[in-house]
Amino acid sequence: MSILDQWSPENPAPLDLRVFAQVQLNQSRRLKAQAQGSATEQAQQLETLMEKVADATRHPYHWARHFTKTFNPHWVEEHRPSPYEPFPDKPYFQPMFDLLMDPDEPVYWWEKSRDMMVSWGIVAFFLWQAMKFPERRVLFQTMEGEKATELVDYAKVLYGNQPDWLKEAHPLVKPADTQAAEILAFANGSEILRIPSGKGKIRFYHPWGLFNDESAFQPYAGDCYNESISAVKGKIVFNSSANPGWFADAKRDISL
Amino acid sequence: MDVKKALRKSREVTPQTPVEIVRGMSVRRTKGGIPVIKLHYSADPERDPNLNPAWKKTQRALYTSQADWDREQEIMDDAGGGELVFASVLRDHWDKIVITDMRYKPHPTWRCEAGFDHGKTNPTAFERAYVDNDGVIIFCGEYYMPGLEVWQHVPYLKKMDDIRKVSACYADPSIFPDTMQQSQTPNKVQERAKSINELYCEQGIELFSPFAGDRMDVSFAARVMMHWSNLEHREPTLKIVCRNWSEKPQPGLHNWDCPNLLWEMMRTRRVKLTNQQLLTRNVAEAIVDKDNHARDAAKYLAMSHPEPTIKTMQQIAKEAVAPLAEQGDLTSALIRYNQTVDRVKAQGQPARMGRRR
Image (cartoon, each protein chain N blue to C red):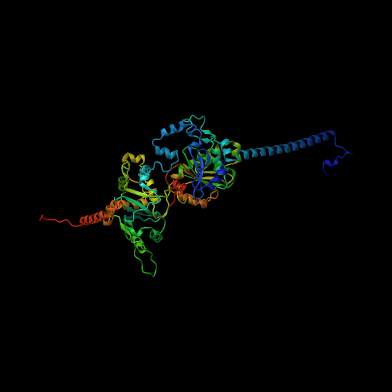
């Protein structure tokens, strides 16, 4: 027989005991209501954050222009206020990202004047893809290993210069500065990987994207391109300033 | 223009036709349909020569050569690969050197000679030329085809007009040694190694003789420039017939034109040395060993120094009587004809050596 069973309307408990019980009950009700309110508030906050993240990453150029920064090593010489600045507001960036986003065009060849920030733009596009979509492997390839590492560095700079809430929404497997120089791996399974230039290097992988930079300066760029056709299932971008060779001839349909 | 629209339009126009997206940015497609995006510095308003001409002026001044500027900023792939050897003189005297008249045909009495360069993955080139009575070499007809076997080239060569008139065809000496290993099947008599020329002979092309003269590209370039020297005051002594010029090669049989020879000559460059090499060497005269297949075939022919076609006795006599025949003085024409024939015959007689009697 429980202690509570000895009390009834006909045989009420002493007043002090009843007051104590009432206080306990009120307190318990209040805590329950508070917990319920807090959960709703948290859910609302989370929803707002997700909307904010979705809005920030709705288009790669919108994200690149407003939510990250590039690194300019010549900032002192160029009288810039900081080495880290957002993508500049040039009229060609929006169409550039629109072109890259077109789902009907899996391959692009870019020919450009020097110092137009095209490499930064393409890196930003691929980084955006890796952040947004799970299990997206992207390969960066260029003339020599160090240069390709620099492209991975571009990606690390762009990732690191985002607001914290964007970084938290797209977490890495471990902090970027503790990852190897040639890789940027995400918790969602995506990764950006540097590979060496040359024949047969892409064959080991089945990536979603390939960015081959300064293609006109790579002796085996033609072989790399032909190998990438079957290996890459998403986007292939070859980009270069001018130089005689396979890339120059292939762009102009000079092939024998 | 909207990106979607530009991409769609680039599919509708012929390959290599640029469609502008924004100023300085265009898209064109290769024959295979790959979009090529060109991003010129004029896409940046700060660098656009129309809006800010000072940028180009200051930046150009920082580059030490026009070629470097053209390559780095103007997106000209071929710029700065070394000095162009023939392009400027060809451009300046195009109308004199390149025969573009659709009705042009070489005279049937001119001697026909040819040059040949065999390639396996590289193009095989056969250049046919005529030598007129003044010794002017006129390249008029070519076969240019990469990637085929000997037996596949032969039907094209046999189909070429005037192939039976070719009196001499000089070819790369390397096709004459017996270096081509033949198939060795078990239980069959093993075949001996053959030369590439022998493979052509087996297919019915017994035309080639090894070129034994100066094969250096530099010598050929100097020779061609002699043919094209002082063109302000004289006619060139080496001409190229081309009525279908294009900025890219046109593989196949061209019976009366040489578009590929002209294309290769336009691209011929001298080797460019690096700054480090220039510290220890003189400026290079060597010519880049690339796109030189039709050029090599032409080299074997031109460097054989072909003699002018000698006029026949009838041709000389015919030319001598032509003015009289035009005037209707047929008696004098007959007399002049006999005189000319006697004179030409006398020229061929041996001179007497000995004491005067």
